[in-house]
Image (cartoon, rainbow over all chains, first blue to last red; front, side):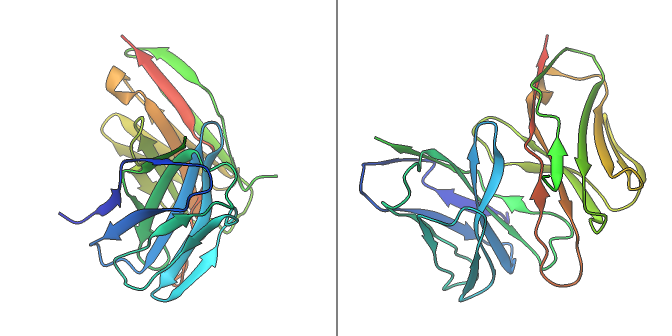
Length: 113
Length: 113
């Protein structure tokens, strides 16, 4: 079955640590996205990538970094510079133009301990 | 002004009720309109998709778009407890090149038996 796989489902980070969230898709989609979801704030775009080796900042990129070395993979690193990283992180993908919307992964819940 | 405004709710209805979920948008360039359903701790899944004014039905769900008023709605007939979820509207200007969805804040719906 085609889809998007995010791992891990739950992640705990200590203060000052960097952590990396995995996102893999086998839909052959060109574009991939990372969103952060907080209660009452909807989805906020962190980074997006239209093609391999290219990505752009979204609305809340500070404290995050990404790479897109393969079409199938778009990992997100939450750095120690992100002061409030506890949130639900969603990865998505789409064909060019996103006319038919996104396909989302099942999310990663990151908690700072 | 946000590009997409969604009634935040939360909304609580008895089983069997008709539910109306609403969004307004500000940019007349938006051509594609979607509704996503998101269960707790899961990724959003595409529920309805439309690109024209008028109504689109799928079982108990009807998506309505009024481009002249820049207003989109989702109606749920004979609501069930399994419909309890967060509903997100999303819009897209489309085009043949890269497109990015703009999401509403989401409405939390609870259908109680």
